[in-house]
Length: 347
Image (cartoon, rainbow, N blue to C red; front, side):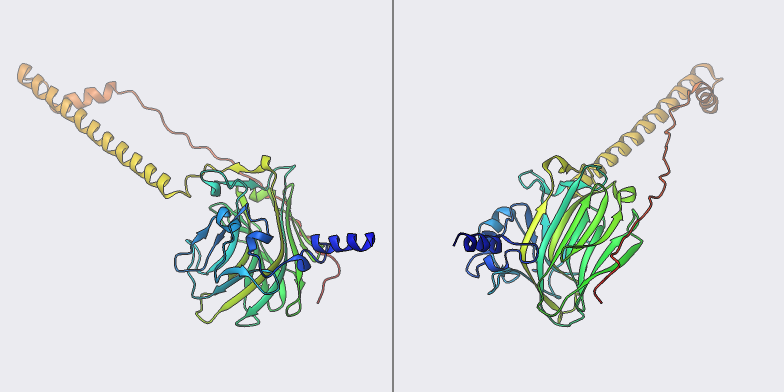
């Protein structure tokens, strides 16, 4: 009897291949069955609304995010849904917040270049109903803050691909097949960033090992998971089911990003400051020119010898050169890229 109890605990808590699938309930909300205090949710409604971690844990559900009859956390997206800035496609997708209690939690993220860093997201997925068997859906990401995604894990035509950026600007991308699945098959997926190396696991088998710290260390990053439909067609739709989800970032590696390109308020303030500085400079120049002209006029009337040109020449002769801005840069050598794929792959 003791052995049976231990076996039941293992099934509910999850083994390598069955993670919480049998321990979920269709009568509980996603926030009751998954730890969502480090996530916010973006919806595919008309305004691409965001749902906070507190609301997610407080039994939030909608037609885009709910518990299905098998207990899975379910993400539904239709192609005609609302989109976020910078994207043409709708999503019902979770975004990692490694410091959710901060006043601006989006700015707290993690870096890939730290030699002792270790971050990962892990999930057990099932691709549900699609309008087309070839429909493309991104189900996991590492996204840079205010920059492109380093990696997107995309399901299409019963295959799973890793779309990986190979340069700092995100212009060069590789598409690597990491696994295949049957209709309604449950599979596991884990994306790891370890000491600057990007590793992807499909059903617990490592599929990639890419050194990215040489070109991606300038960014801070965060994980995403859910249903990012790669279509804006009104007839397109997809359901994605999650049975297990875990994300990990050490508190010590969750750092504040001071970039000013993200906040509209900061950009507006910078623009206002520049405008004021320009106005002050123009006024100062006008005052100087007026002073010189007035002095020349006074001197001419007094002596009859000085002219405006004479005063300008005298001023130029005594003027001291100002500071010259020095702009310096440094050239970074491209890092070596290593991608390793197991010898045997599922065909």
